[in-house]
Length: 262
Ligand code: LIP
Image: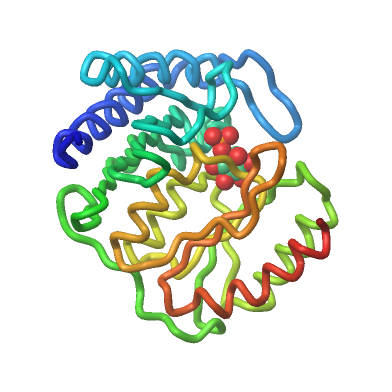
């Protein structure tokens, strides 16, 4: 069994180097392979994933490595699997918005062991291991104490991939449930805000395992709860991450809407 400290060191090195590579190429922010209405396929996504992959491969040559830009499908959960999102918040990055990050997680037989999320343009590095504290720039972080939904700041995203009606129903439910909905455009970065106690919850339907693998562990190790409410056949996920105190009430609002749409 690999030590969690070693796994975290490599996850951190890979996330930081990938983020620094993208930051060094900020002048290429519009250098996309394809620009779609709901997504941008960016050349720097591919290049930064290669940077992270090289670091991980050198340290753990026999581990499975997979990321948003991988041509293969999601690998089986057996053994060690590294999960990379080289730029989470690609559309933000493409438009010059600073809210994006590089995320690297490692799982063993499906259990998250270590994760790092690096936000280069706000210079914040979030980390956690399965048996250690959640950290931001090396300092321990904790989720908020907000227990009343009407006082909760809730981040969400607008994945309209499944149905626009579903997307707007979910947004309306969060807007009615929480004090304020907020939409920043990077699931991993938004979940780290929950871990740091700056937001009280996050929900999005239509993200992927690479968006949440590291940040979900960081939320849990900060005392919160991160849960996949629905896993869809195409690999998309509906993910709820909260400070724990709001989790059951949030799930009770959101899950019936998800189920209504199948
Ligand atoms: C993004 C997510 C975001 C979601 C976007 C996109 P990407 O990931 O972080 O929360 O709203 O649709 O999925 O594609 O930038 O890595």
